[in-house]
Amino acid sequence: MTAPVPKVDKVGEAGRVETRFVDNTLAGRLLYSVVWVIVCGFTMLYTRMSIHGREHVPRSGPYIIAPVHRSYVDTPIAACITQRRVRFMAKASMWKIGWFGSFISMCGAFPVHRGTADREAFKRAIAALEGGEPLVLFPEGERKDGPTVQPLFDGATFVAARAGVPIVPIGIGGSARVMPRGASMIYPRKVHVVIGAPIEVEVGASGRASRRAIAEASVRLRDELQRLFDEAQSRVG
Image 1 (cartoon, helix red, strand yellow):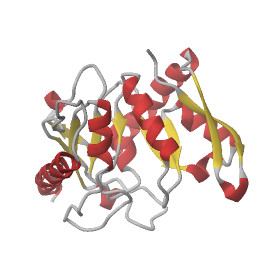
Image 2 (cartoon, one colour; image 1 turned 120 degrees about the vertical axis):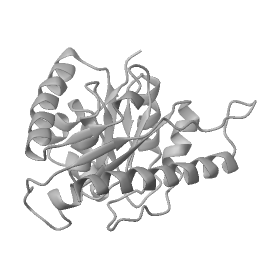
Image 3 (cartoon, helix red, strand yellow; image 1 turned 135 degrees about the vertical axis):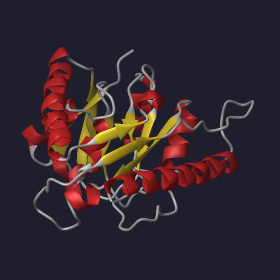
């Protein structure tokens, strides 16, 4: 089974992007491979990026990549931990330009309407995982500042529980110096990535996780992200 790719139909009222699903295509997979080589090659060389803990990345099957979030470059950095195609959310306004929306959809993105309970984005996230592909979700939500991992939303652990997949926590050190908040340039600063062991969300006999289990998993995830973030930051100075 292959995961569906959202494709733009039109921009609806109030600027909301209406989408539908289409099947994966060979062209889409080839495009992602080419873009991955260019983007990750540039990112790793330009930032002298080093990655520790690759053995924790599953070689097959779906899983959630859960990085700390301090910069816009965190998404391509997270994609560099595996050569498999990853899915990720992007703000819906990026689909207002038709050709660009189609391009980033083929690169694995799907739209989310921020500031709302976007059920369609949730369905796309589940569909990507059920299709066997890794999914990038930032547990802190939007970009944060500073060395402390903020209290997490339960979105990542909830999706993991519903899809029955592990969460791979990622500490990224140095990305805030590569592209600080408000910057229009990407600076050649050192980046170090630390990948932690996968975290499972406890599921009951019913096959679903309780709210308590999801909340407890979020706490474990936050503690592990803080540890990984501290280690990653210490390696870039």
